[in-house]
Structure formats: structure tokens, C-alpha cells
Image (tube, rainbow, N blue to C red; front, side, top):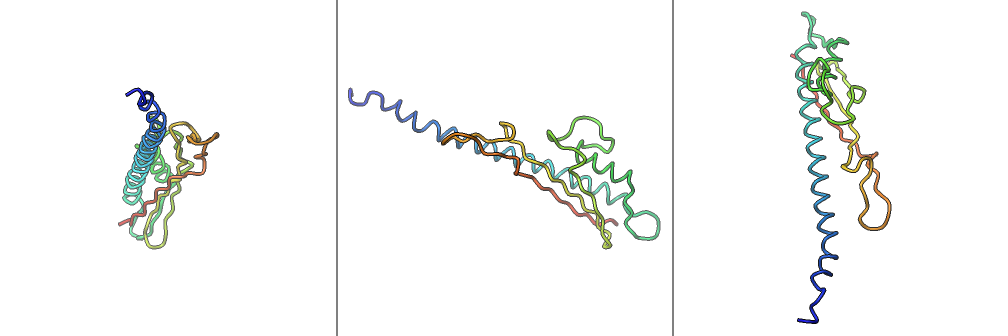
Length: 148
């Protein structure tokens, strides 16, 4: 019994950082998936909104007006066409939303959102010193909808 003193503490010191790293990784992955899901849902909603407004008149040609384009961008960023309230994700703005149309009567909405870690712009390293920058991690959501 006497030779076992401190064994539990040594095991904890070895195991705790590994457990914390796994917990942190699961939380970060979950946050990334939630943010990507929000972006995808927002682009789908804006795509449906824009497709319903894009065909005007009897020409059968897609015509995306500036007002409709602005409303679709607001719908992606704020969740409403008026652009009121706070953005769905921190740091998301209308400049990150791209809207295009093609000759096949499709409207496309694309969003590039820089992922933001729980610790700001970097993920701490658990081994060694320094941190890993998340500035290059971009979530990309794209939706194309046919205007009828």
C-alpha cells in the first residue's frame, strides 16, 4: 500500500490533459457544425426567397433586382429581409454573401464565413508553446435554386 502513494495523482496528471484536449476538440467540432448548419439553412431560405422574386413578367428570364438582392443578403445575415437585429453568427456581414444567376434560370447564393474559435482567432496548443491560427478556416455554404 505504501508503494502506491501518489499513483492516482500521477495518473491524473497524465490523463487530464488528454481528456481536456478531447473535450475541447468535441466542443469545437460541434460549434463548427452548428455554424455551418446555420449558414446552410440561411442560404437555402434566401435562395427560395430570391427564386420566388427572380422571374418577372412573361419573358421567362431571371432578373435579380438590386432590392431583391439586398433583401436576400439580409435574409442570410440577419434572418429577415429587412436587415434588422443582430447577425445570425458573430462577424457575419452582407459583404460575405455572393448572389449570381445564370441562363438556365438558376439563382445561386454563396457565403464565405471565417470560422471563429472559442478562443478568438486561434486554438491553443496543448503540446509545446504557441497557438494554431483559425484565420484560414473558412466555412463555405452554397445553394442554387431554379426560379420557376
